[in-house]
Image 1 (cartoon, helix red, strand yellow):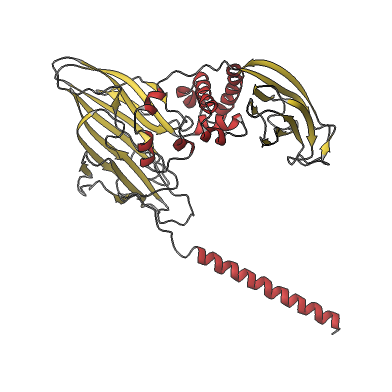
Image 2 (cartoon, rainbow, N blue to C red):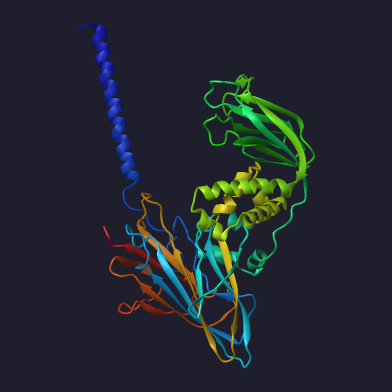
Length: 467
């Protein structure tokens, strides 16, 4: 065998050894990083801190305290009704029942409020009954205006902080703002890459601006540069082809304050927008118009709303979220951003309106359903709220002991001004759902428990026994 062949064989064997050793090290490292299920983080009361938190079930309340009205509550967790066949613990039918008793000699009118956690997109609206008759309600929504709300709230304690006073609920009942600020809008259309064969042709707008006097917002853009130190900025988007859904859509660049300087439009081969990678044939028609912030946001909100209802159950979404309400919610969020709150400014730093639109549609917040009740003197009225609750969970394959466990929790008096005399819980879990942990002290024979009103937070964590 020649020296060259011996050398090659030696190199090949060495490479093989290195590859096998590396593979073994990877297996060993993976095995060491997943030796067993990770422990579950818990709160002081023993309830799990889940990766995804669905929010607690809140008690009924009123716009004002009414000492002459007493309340009795029973909350039922029903895992045997209208549940997912593959996992009976994956969702739960909640029936939150109340008896309101007028202890006075005069009829009492109560402006009832029922808070619940959801998002517009989830469409989890309770069905209300008064003495077994369906009640019509007015719906209001809490704002995304708190630093706690800009990050997912991970436990009931986060909601306790949110409701430390009445400000959050009161803000939900305020009118939507009217945004009459004058703005300049650059409308881009007739966009083309000029026949380029670049992998990701991009249109970029460069400009200079005074960051203390001007704010820039976009719709239909993908990225940009925020450079307040040098007073310059960029906004860019991928140039669509004729086959793309957004081929004929307008792009909006909205300027609040002083107009932009040194406004230039340039095509590039990709989103990096680097010098030397220009596409000079790329072009777009630009119209400059002056309008109000409210008028341009109305156009954008309607456009996004129409697309949103195409991607979901349109009738269900429209039943609780009209185009006008969606627009109002956008104006309210924009108004909060425009107030200069640091958390808001940082969260939406590039001014991409899609981020705000997504938050309006998808962000969990507290909703408030309201209606009036008249309770005759020395009489009582039964009120109930029924809805599906999806519960809290850990993400699949994340290696926690709570994999497959769903958590449900509720608070006894948080956020309520009602005079509760008694609360109890009923758990209907049948044969295919097991209780993993709880602090309800459930009676094993009756699946029932009387609650201590001095305990604010109760929880129930369950797992499906179906294989």
